[in-house]
Length: 145
Image 1 (cartoon, rainbow, N blue to C red):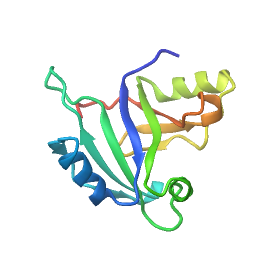
Image 2: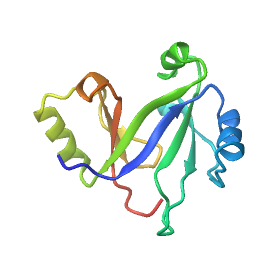
Image 3: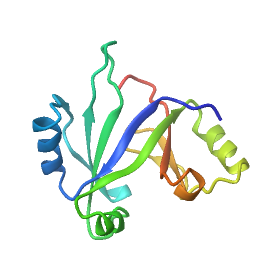
Image 4: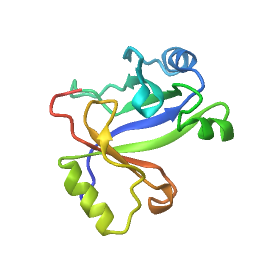
């Protein structure tokens, strides 16, 4: 497995609106995308884009808020009421090949491959198999984001 681009850092939050204000007012973020619902994954999502010198988007901060009481991030927020870093996400060119390689190494994949917030296939690897960090693997989007 070859390390791909760090696409985003997922940050769980009890309020996307409050988190947007924080990134805008405290961190100086100027490129914040419109929040949207992703009910299939039980979350509301908003991307904060970081700048780079090349003009392309840098690594994103993915703000994730529970969609409803059944959201998988509710347990994280119960332990971390103010929110916090939830996961990191790396890109790979071929999601199925990456999944096979991780499984071949004995890494525990948490669910079937599915479509993520960027509209590309994703899966998550158990934190206990990834140095304590929940890790998302996503297929590199075909167009610039």
